Length: 305
Length: 274
Image 1 (cartoon, helix red, strand yellow):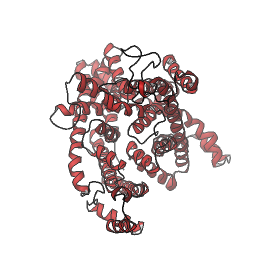
Image 2 (cartoon, each protein chain N blue to C red):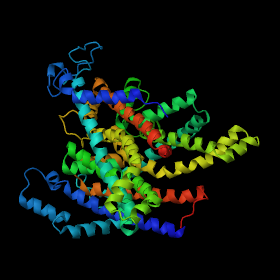
Image 3 (cartoon, each protein chain N blue to C red):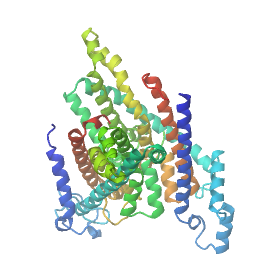
Image 4 (cartoon, rainbow over the protein chains, first blue to last red):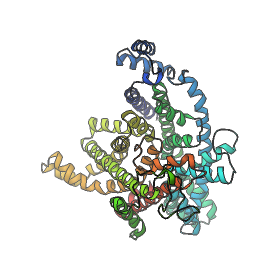
């Protein structure tokens, strides 16, 4: 187990190192950021001064080494657009994203389990069909379109919920559901299909034969085993959540990391781009490793060599 | 055997025909602005006119014509991106599985590193870096998407390599190229086809999201995602601008997903779980 964990950690480090090179290179390929920072009448001398001040006149290798060194110490430099330390921006935005993601994930889990289990337990009934329609729509509707339609109908016409921005719990409902629907669709289908498979196995037949109540067969015997494939995909779901957040936060004017990424990219604010991409990647990688570890505890049959 | 999904196939065929013959079928020029007729509602609404069956956008461009032309972008983006990713991913998976050992492991490390990257984020960075265009959208999605296929095809190839017919092919002196092309590829092809068909819809949604964020197909070219973004500011007054392109995406993606599900059940039932 510890050898497995060590291997995964090394792999994660290599992944992040590769990513840092790609991100560093890309951020510098987005064109000269100084054209955006300096006023229109800036002279060549102004450009040279600014370039020197920002360290952009040094060799690329030196810039990269500095970037990695600082990043490891948790320093991502200064935003070119906001003229503030990137860390401040991250500290402002990250909790907002985290709150929205946690809300969305909680709602998704609360809905996915009962719906997925019921769809499997009452296979081929109206209920199963309804669950299937919800899932299929969730996978076919573009997230940003759901968001816009919700804003117009629920926020605009009905005036039931605020159309955007942050605030109390009511502000979480629309972006949270929009963000979660796609994952809910996948998770529900996965729970349904893996539960159906488990319900078909010998130990379930034995449990039923000795007279265990159907409710107990499903919730206590079968569901535990059906959880395994769901756990496998938890990392994938999380990565999808992070990605979808860019679109959802932009639509709902939610001041989180996703919106920060969008703003930074359109403004070529490369210290912020680098930081957002790297922090996101670190979070995704850490979640994936944790999933691998949790996996072993859930399923004692797995032994990592 | 499951029934052939007639309706989804008909929807796809319908949209392909509409896209191909958009030039003939469109009631108007999708680029022509008529500012006097701007924000005209759909024909069946009060104030609508059958000159603009689905209404017009903020510049008075005919929405129906733009949706028909937009089908070209979405379908082409979906098919070309998935094809390109399948080609690269399939090749990497086959080679890594065939070589095994250190070169194979290295290829799969790169694949895993790619998989860890949120797709829209990199596509966004790439699209903004090199400027928004059709080719850049395709490349920036494909540059990550290939890894998904490489992972699955690698697994498939590794298990095929254990089989007797590969050992025999090696024993009679088949070249590496021959084994990969005539022994491994045909056996992994079904899996690849199923994966590709299941992801056309996904790519169409990602392309739309990129166009929506302004990093996709640049205006004034009609693209469904961009049209939805266009209507965003008018959602309270002129809902049709955003609503109809969204419905078009829904129909096409739904159809592709259902056909993909069907292909999976027919060609590769083992994939069913995921």
